[in-house]
Amino acid sequence: MVRGTISILHRPAYVMFDSGSTHSFVASDFARGFGVEPASLSFLLEVVFLLELYTMDAL
Image (cartoon, rainbow, N blue to C red; front, top):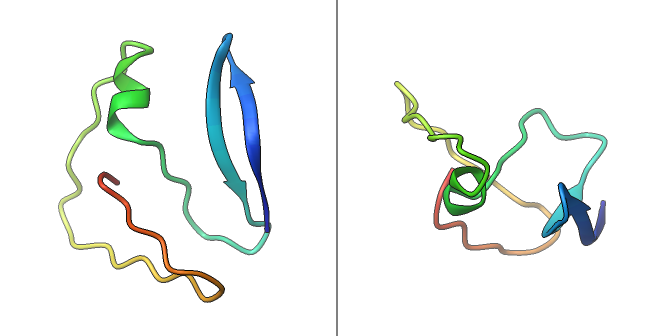
């Protein structure tokens, strides 16, 4: 896993790249900043980080 800050359309974004991951996540507020309205999932998705504990406020 690689963590860091990158620029996406001139906006800083804190990212974690994991080549073994099966899903990608974007914070709701960050997506809204680009005019993208997040949609709710029709199912519960449990996220487990094996190396560290992270608290996510949005999926």
